[in-house]
Length: 161
Image 1: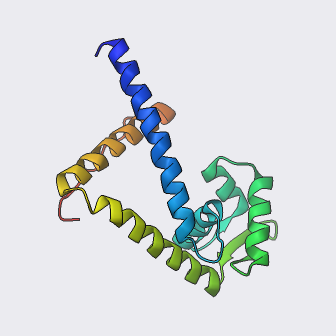
Image 2 (image 1 turned 135 degrees about the horizontal axis):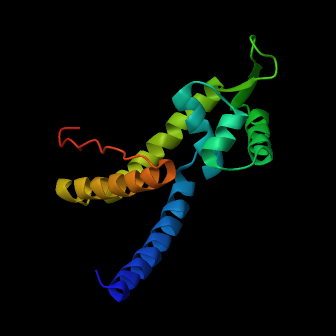
Image 3 (image 1 turned 90 degrees about the vertical axis):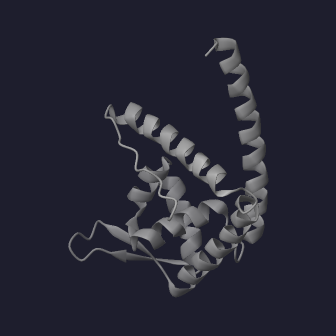
């Protein structure tokens, strides 16, 4: 592909991506429960998905500082969404777990996010959605390959999923 054409495409994708993300962040903020922020939701979802995590795991996965995660977790603990538990095996390890209220909030936020995303993706046909999935998978595989130096095999998308 011609370099000038590629630059035009990149600029257009960048512009569209920024517009899309701004709009989605605004709309997603409107479906969050109990004033939960996007960052708080991401941490709570991570805990929900794994059952429990440490502050270090959260910081590493999100590529943010321990102090930033600690401050965010402190707010979640004060709000009654998350609790800290010391490991019985290693007292230096502190596990983060969701409370019942935290689980309910994550579920409600997920349902709101699902409805919002369905509102837009529901306007696309199946082939368009599958095409988007394939593009995201390909770009992520390239990023992982560059990061690790390994070739990552892409899992084919099954239309029946």
